[in-house]
Structures are given as structure tokens and as C-alpha cells.
Picture 1 (cartoon, helix red, strand yellow):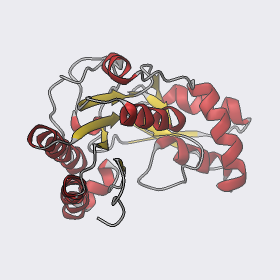
Picture 2: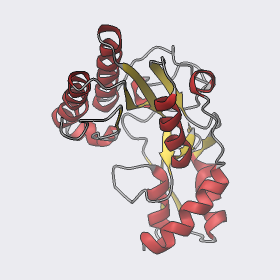
Picture 3: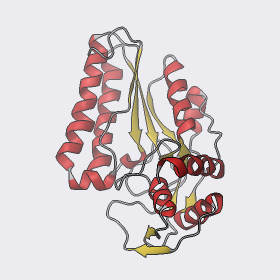
Picture 4: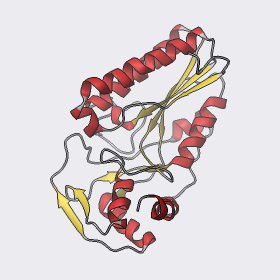
Length: 248
């Protein structure tokens, strides 16, 4: 409550992140993501904030039935992480209906970018970068033909800003690049932009990993002018330039 006293908008990004972490620590995941969100919402209501911008996840969808995916695709999360983010979304939207508090839920797809550090539970790009810079094989789970929609953190930051500025807007919105790439191609591209060549190894598919991911971002564009501008190649070049000094 002290943190948001005197504020107009709260950006709620704090979370327990990742499918694998949530499978290993489901109670902790729910306590942080659901109960933590409820506490933020209640503090925002009591202090009379205008809006809460909540960082949600494409994990709320589970396995996608069609791509590109719109916001009205059935939400059938298949991990505790996806379920906890969906529960937090429902709380946000309930508060938006019950109280004079706007709530925007931003469903991030695969976010990456400068300052994203290596974590065993984290995004594939920091993991690949860390292993490549240490001359270790890049491990791809499954055949590598699964696809992901990567969105750069610069575009995510702008989405948060625009969502906060938009008045009278509540709801859930996809935040992604609107393009997809296979994990095999990602591994090749990362080696191209970094000039580092390493072996590729394949492991068994992981529990909770979806096969394909691609977002329709038309709703966010229409509601608050979201317009991602960082290509994957540019983003990887910037990331690897940073990683060479930070991850080695």
C-alpha cells in the first residue's frame, strides 16, 4: 500500500514466472501470482488509483487450437503457472466491473531483450546465449520445429506505457510481435548474429510446452496503439552484444 500511495496507475509485473518452476512449486506459484495480484488490486482500490496494468501471459491459453490466436481463444491452461495467471486476470477484470478501477491485462508471449539474465527456468534466448558464450551445446527439447512468437522488451515496455495512457480501456490483450519462428531457426539465427558456432543437441519434449505459438495483436493495436517495431534479428544482435559482457 505504501508503494502506490499517491499514484494514478500501478504496473503489476511481480510474479513467479515459468511453467517448469510452477510444476515444481505450484503452491508458491499460486500464492505469488493470485494472492499477490489480489493484494495489488485491493491496495489500488483503497487508494483510488485510476488503473492497474497487469502483466499476464500467453500461458493462460494452454495448447493452441488455431494460430494466430486471438484474445477470445479458449483459455485452457495446462500448467499451474498458466492457471495462476488466468486466475489473476479474472480478479483484475472482476475489479474493473465492480469498482471505479480500470484494469488492463497484457498477455505477454515470449519476451526477451537486453538485461534479461540467464536462469534455468527462464526464456530460451538467455539460455541459448549463455550456453553459446560458454562453448556449450544448445539443447533443443523435441524436434525443434515448434514455433514461438518472440517480442522484444522494448516493445513490451511501450505496450505498458500505451495501455496506461489509454483512458476508459479495460480488458485482456495479446502482446507479441505477430510473427513466429521455429526453435531450430532461432538457434541458427543466434549463432549467425553472434558469430559463435556450437553444436545442437535434442532432448525429450518438456511437460507444459506448447507446440506452436503466434499471436493476433490487432486488439491491442486498436485499443491503445500497440505497434511492435523490433525485429527478431535486431533484438538478437542487441541482446548478444550485451550478453557478451554480462553473461560470460
